[in-house]
Figure (tube, rainbow, N blue to C red):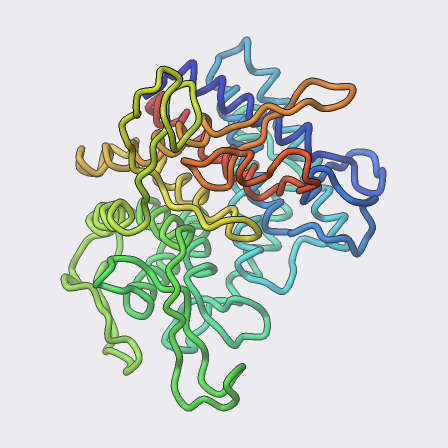
Length: 424
């Protein structure tokens, strides 16, 4: 495991690389900032250009990570923390500008991600400056109201994926529950977590399925029964873990309602507490969502070390490629990082979570590539999969643009590793 100083330096390097490579002023509007979805970008940003709202939300989370990391340095580092907060403020303005002057959109999961990041921005600003961070407070209020509207009794509870209201899923209900828990609406958060265990939990794997279709809506037309989508994604496990930790032992942990026909996959022990469930979820992630890789110190992952000796293998989090999947593993790492330093969890669980985060961070760091940039300092490129080289994900000289999602993912993991290594 790296030292806190080394982990901080790596996180700082990722922060500088991502912001300098992808950051720009949308439509040249002063006081705003946004990230290109690719580097190099193909053309000027236009109002209809691809921009990925939810990728930007996770980038905002990373800006707050950087501000928190700088704030830990005491008074001398306070200026750095405030600079990151100022960039976060510009980023929120950029998001609102690009989203046609508003924060809400049609996807409840997108809104949940931005609401969570805005909560953190507002809280950190109040801690450091004594006042909130406009427009973070506005985003929290507007998006919070929309999230409440996505929580309905259809299919017994849970949150819809989007405003078409055809599909309820973990991708919305997990971050929604976490948002409500942090906002103080613990009853709603606990009910949402209970619905997830009642409806989308797979006891054989110990993990959460993607979602469930409302009968009579969407495809196939007029299906008489709810249909489960059984895909397992890393990020869905992360947000449920975060919600369980935010709720702790308070609230009803059982299933207060009778089974609803389609929900026949209850946990074996319905009386489990949130923290017991959290520990079990960390174990399931370690068992089901990891791969074994070799990460030679100072050399290329997946091979021999510079001395020719084969390096020991480590177990890292499984990534899901590029595109939207390029963020999934990083989101899971964020919440494993919280679990790793939660003293309410068993020591063994904390150690498992810490190992997964720090080993994944090490593999990403060893796989990095330093690439020259005309007229500026070289920048880092991280691989899409820990245990691989960045040159495998994004070959040099072939015109393959680097995706924002995978680089934000690597930054997220490195910030999580810093928190784990520092221990708070």
